[in-house]
Length: 248
Image (cartoon, rainbow, N blue to C red; front, side, top):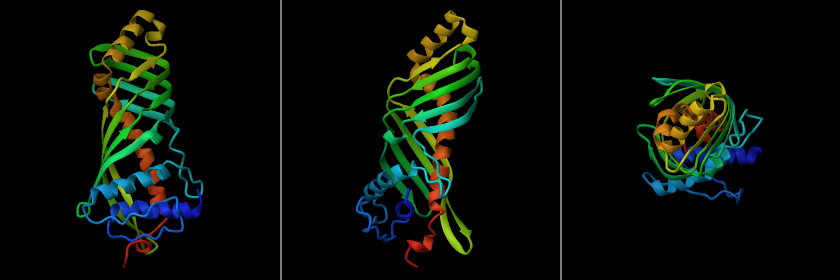
Protein backbone atom coordinates (compact mmCIF):
# COMPACT_ATOMS: atom_id res chain seq x y z
CA UNK A 1 0.00 0.00 0.00
CA UNK A 2 1.34 3.43 -0.94
CA UNK A 3 2.19 5.96 1.74
CA UNK A 4 -0.62 8.19 0.40
CA UNK A 5 -3.29 5.50 0.81
CA UNK A 6 -1.78 4.55 4.17
CA UNK A 7 -2.18 8.13 5.34
CA UNK A 8 -5.75 8.26 4.02
CA UNK A 9 -6.53 5.09 5.91
CA UNK A 10 -5.23 6.48 9.16
CA UNK A 11 -7.17 9.69 8.77
CA UNK A 12 -10.41 7.90 7.93
CA UNK A 13 -9.97 5.45 10.78
CA UNK A 14 -9.71 8.22 13.28
CA UNK A 15 -12.48 10.22 11.64
CA UNK A 16 -14.58 7.22 12.59
CA UNK A 17 -13.63 7.90 16.19
CA UNK A 18 -13.66 11.71 16.18
CA UNK A 19 -16.65 13.06 14.33
CA UNK A 20 -15.49 16.67 14.41
CA UNK A 21 -12.32 16.06 12.38
CA UNK A 22 -12.08 17.63 8.92
CA UNK A 23 -9.94 15.48 6.67
CA UNK A 24 -8.61 16.64 3.32
CA UNK A 25 -8.59 13.60 1.05
CA UNK A 26 -9.59 15.31 -2.18
CA UNK A 27 -6.25 14.31 -3.69
CA UNK A 28 -7.45 10.70 -3.63
CA UNK A 29 -10.71 10.51 -5.64
CA UNK A 30 -11.12 6.80 -4.83
CA UNK A 31 -12.05 7.76 -1.26
CA UNK A 32 -15.26 9.66 -0.57
CA UNK A 33 -15.05 12.54 1.87
CA UNK A 34 -17.38 12.26 4.85
CA UNK A 35 -17.50 14.85 7.62
CA UNK A 36 -19.60 13.17 10.30
CA UNK A 37 -21.46 15.18 12.90
CA UNK A 38 -21.89 13.89 16.46
CA UNK A 39 -24.42 11.04 16.69
CA UNK A 40 -24.63 10.75 12.90
CA UNK A 41 -24.69 6.94 12.88
CA UNK A 42 -25.48 6.71 9.16
CA UNK A 43 -22.40 8.76 8.33
CA UNK A 44 -20.06 6.82 10.59
CA UNK A 45 -21.41 3.58 9.11
CA UNK A 46 -20.49 4.79 5.63
CA UNK A 47 -17.01 5.69 6.86
CA UNK A 48 -16.61 2.27 8.48
CA UNK A 49 -17.34 0.62 5.13
CA UNK A 50 -14.85 2.93 3.40
CA UNK A 51 -11.97 2.06 5.70
CA UNK A 52 -12.70 -1.63 6.32
CA UNK A 53 -11.17 -2.96 3.06
CA UNK A 54 -7.95 -1.05 3.84
CA UNK A 55 -7.62 -2.77 7.23
CA UNK A 56 -7.37 -6.11 5.41
CA UNK A 57 -4.50 -5.02 3.16
CA UNK A 58 -0.82 -5.83 3.80
CA UNK A 59 1.85 -3.16 4.24
CA UNK A 60 5.39 -4.46 4.84
CA UNK A 61 6.60 -0.99 5.82
CA UNK A 62 4.53 -1.00 9.01
CA UNK A 63 4.24 -4.77 9.49
CA UNK A 64 0.58 -5.03 8.44
CA UNK A 65 -0.37 -8.47 7.12
CA UNK A 66 -2.85 -9.70 4.52
CA UNK A 67 -6.10 -10.49 6.34
CA UNK A 68 -8.01 -12.32 3.58
CA UNK A 69 -6.89 -14.99 3.23
CA UNK A 70 -5.69 -15.00 6.82
CA UNK A 71 -3.23 -17.54 8.20
CA UNK A 72 -3.31 -18.73 11.80
CA UNK A 73 -0.56 -21.08 12.99
CA UNK A 74 -2.63 -22.12 16.03
CA UNK A 75 -6.07 -21.40 17.48
CA UNK A 76 -6.94 -22.92 20.84
CA UNK A 77 -10.38 -23.56 22.28
CA UNK A 78 -10.52 -24.40 25.98
CA UNK A 79 -14.23 -24.90 26.69
CA UNK A 80 -15.83 -26.44 29.74
CA UNK A 81 -16.33 -29.89 28.23
CA UNK A 82 -14.31 -29.63 25.02
CA UNK A 83 -10.68 -28.88 24.20
CA UNK A 84 -9.55 -28.28 20.63
CA UNK A 85 -6.66 -26.83 18.67
CA UNK A 86 -6.61 -25.76 15.03
CA UNK A 87 -3.23 -25.71 13.29
CA UNK A 88 -2.00 -24.06 10.08
CA UNK A 89 -5.46 -22.69 9.38
CA UNK A 90 -6.32 -20.57 6.37
CA UNK A 91 -9.43 -18.39 6.69
CA UNK A 92 -11.18 -16.65 3.81
CA UNK A 93 -14.30 -14.51 3.87
CA UNK A 94 -13.48 -11.30 5.72
CA UNK A 95 -13.65 -9.37 2.45
CA UNK A 96 -17.34 -10.29 2.23
CA UNK A 97 -18.26 -8.47 5.45
CA UNK A 98 -20.26 -5.22 5.47
CA UNK A 99 -20.91 -2.93 8.41
CA UNK A 100 -24.68 -2.43 8.64
CA UNK A 101 -24.55 -0.03 11.57
CA UNK A 102 -21.90 1.75 13.65
CA UNK A 103 -22.31 3.74 16.84
CA UNK A 104 -19.54 5.70 18.57
CA UNK A 105 -19.62 7.01 22.15
CA UNK A 106 -17.03 9.77 22.43
CA UNK A 107 -17.29 10.08 26.21
CA UNK A 108 -16.87 6.36 26.86
CA UNK A 109 -14.46 5.88 23.92
CA UNK A 110 -16.38 2.86 22.64
CA UNK A 111 -17.40 1.82 19.15
CA UNK A 112 -20.22 -0.67 18.47
CA UNK A 113 -20.47 -2.32 15.06
CA UNK A 114 -23.12 -4.60 13.58
CA UNK A 115 -21.45 -6.51 10.74
CA UNK A 116 -22.98 -8.93 8.23
CA UNK A 117 -20.59 -11.41 6.59
CA UNK A 118 -21.32 -13.46 3.50
CA UNK A 119 -19.55 -16.58 4.75
CA UNK A 120 -16.21 -18.03 5.82
CA UNK A 121 -14.11 -21.04 4.83
CA UNK A 122 -11.55 -22.47 7.27
CA UNK A 123 -9.14 -25.26 6.33
CA UNK A 124 -6.22 -26.79 8.21
CA UNK A 125 -5.39 -29.39 10.84
CA UNK A 126 -7.17 -30.10 14.11
CA UNK A 127 -6.83 -31.90 17.42
CA UNK A 128 -9.98 -32.33 19.52
CA UNK A 129 -11.01 -34.15 22.69
CA UNK A 130 -14.05 -33.97 24.96
CA UNK A 131 -17.79 -33.70 24.39
CA UNK A 132 -19.49 -31.91 21.54
CA UNK A 133 -22.54 -30.83 23.57
CA UNK A 134 -23.97 -34.36 24.09
CA UNK A 135 -21.60 -36.62 22.16
CA UNK A 136 -18.04 -37.68 22.97
CA UNK A 137 -15.55 -36.62 20.31
CA UNK A 138 -11.85 -37.28 19.78
CA UNK A 139 -9.48 -37.14 16.85
CA UNK A 140 -6.87 -35.29 14.82
CA UNK A 141 -6.28 -34.72 11.14
CA UNK A 142 -7.45 -32.47 8.33
CA UNK A 143 -10.54 -30.32 8.72
CA UNK A 144 -12.69 -27.78 6.93
CA UNK A 145 -15.53 -25.55 8.11
CA UNK A 146 -17.72 -23.77 5.56
CA UNK A 147 -20.26 -21.18 6.65
CA UNK A 148 -22.78 -18.99 4.90
CA UNK A 149 -24.11 -15.75 6.37
CA UNK A 150 -22.84 -14.68 9.77
CA UNK A 151 -23.70 -11.68 11.92
CA UNK A 152 -20.97 -10.22 14.13
CA UNK A 153 -21.80 -7.72 16.86
CA UNK A 154 -18.55 -6.03 17.85
CA UNK A 155 -17.77 -3.86 20.88
CA UNK A 156 -14.45 -1.99 20.68
CA UNK A 157 -12.79 -0.16 23.55
CA UNK A 158 -10.36 2.56 22.49
CA UNK A 159 -7.33 4.13 24.15
CA UNK A 160 -5.01 7.08 23.71
CA UNK A 161 -1.25 6.53 23.58
CA UNK A 162 1.61 9.06 23.54
CA UNK A 163 4.91 8.46 21.79
CA UNK A 164 7.71 10.97 21.15
CA UNK A 165 5.44 13.78 22.28
CA UNK A 166 2.63 12.85 19.87
CA UNK A 167 -0.79 11.37 20.60
CA UNK A 168 -2.30 8.40 18.79
CA UNK A 169 -5.49 6.34 19.03
CA UNK A 170 -5.61 2.55 19.30
CA UNK A 171 -8.13 -0.23 19.77
CA UNK A 172 -7.54 -1.50 23.31
CA UNK A 173 -10.05 -4.37 23.56
CA UNK A 174 -12.58 -6.10 21.36
CA UNK A 175 -15.59 -8.25 22.18
CA UNK A 176 -17.62 -10.18 19.64
CA UNK A 177 -21.02 -11.84 19.68
CA UNK A 178 -21.11 -14.04 16.54
CA UNK A 179 -24.29 -15.61 15.19
CA UNK A 180 -24.55 -18.11 12.35
CA UNK A 181 -27.59 -17.18 10.25
CA UNK A 182 -27.41 -20.08 7.79
CA UNK A 183 -26.14 -23.70 7.87
CA UNK A 184 -22.52 -24.43 8.72
CA UNK A 185 -20.81 -27.50 7.23
CA UNK A 186 -18.27 -29.28 9.44
CA UNK A 187 -15.85 -31.82 7.94
CA UNK A 188 -13.32 -33.34 10.35
CA UNK A 189 -11.28 -36.23 8.96
CA UNK A 190 -9.97 -39.12 11.06
CA UNK A 191 -12.29 -38.68 14.03
CA UNK A 192 -11.88 -41.54 16.51
CA UNK A 193 -8.77 -42.66 14.60
CA UNK A 194 -10.82 -43.48 11.54
CA UNK A 195 -13.68 -45.37 13.17
CA UNK A 196 -16.29 -44.52 10.56
CA UNK A 197 -19.48 -45.27 12.52
CA UNK A 198 -18.46 -43.06 15.44
CA UNK A 199 -17.15 -40.32 13.15
CA UNK A 200 -20.29 -40.30 10.99
CA UNK A 201 -22.48 -40.00 14.09
CA UNK A 202 -20.62 -36.93 15.35
CA UNK A 203 -20.48 -35.23 11.94
CA UNK A 204 -24.18 -35.93 11.33
CA UNK A 205 -25.01 -34.38 14.71
CA UNK A 206 -22.79 -31.35 14.08
CA UNK A 207 -24.23 -30.63 10.65
CA UNK A 208 -27.86 -31.20 11.60
CA UNK A 209 -27.48 -29.03 14.71
CA UNK A 210 -25.21 -26.46 13.07
CA UNK A 211 -26.49 -23.43 14.97
CA UNK A 212 -26.21 -25.03 18.42
CA UNK A 213 -22.75 -26.35 17.60
CA UNK A 214 -21.62 -22.99 16.18
CA UNK A 215 -22.82 -21.18 19.30
CA UNK A 216 -20.85 -23.65 21.42
CA UNK A 217 -17.48 -23.68 19.64
CA UNK A 218 -17.13 -20.50 17.59
CA UNK A 219 -16.09 -17.81 20.08
CA UNK A 220 -12.40 -18.81 20.50
CA UNK A 221 -12.02 -18.95 16.72
CA UNK A 222 -13.59 -15.56 16.06
CA UNK A 223 -11.68 -13.92 18.90
CA UNK A 224 -8.35 -15.20 17.56
CA UNK A 225 -9.14 -13.98 14.06
CA UNK A 226 -10.54 -10.59 15.07
CA UNK A 227 -7.61 -9.88 17.39
CA UNK A 228 -5.39 -10.31 14.36
CA UNK A 229 -7.53 -7.87 12.36
CA UNK A 230 -7.34 -5.38 15.24
CA UNK A 231 -3.54 -5.68 15.34
CA UNK A 232 -3.48 -4.82 11.65
CA UNK A 233 -5.77 -1.86 12.26
CA UNK A 234 -3.61 -0.56 15.10
CA UNK A 235 -0.49 -0.68 12.95
CA UNK A 236 -2.17 1.71 10.54
CA UNK A 237 -3.50 3.93 13.33
CA UNK A 238 0.01 4.34 14.73
CA UNK A 239 1.18 5.96 11.50
CA UNK A 240 -0.70 9.24 11.99
CA UNK A 241 -0.86 11.28 15.19
CA UNK A 242 -4.05 12.92 16.40
CA UNK A 243 -2.79 16.46 15.80
CA UNK A 244 -2.47 15.73 12.08
CA UNK A 245 -6.22 15.36 11.58
CA UNK A 246 -7.94 16.79 14.67
CA UNK A 247 -8.15 20.61 14.67
CA UNK A 248 -6.01 21.96 17.53
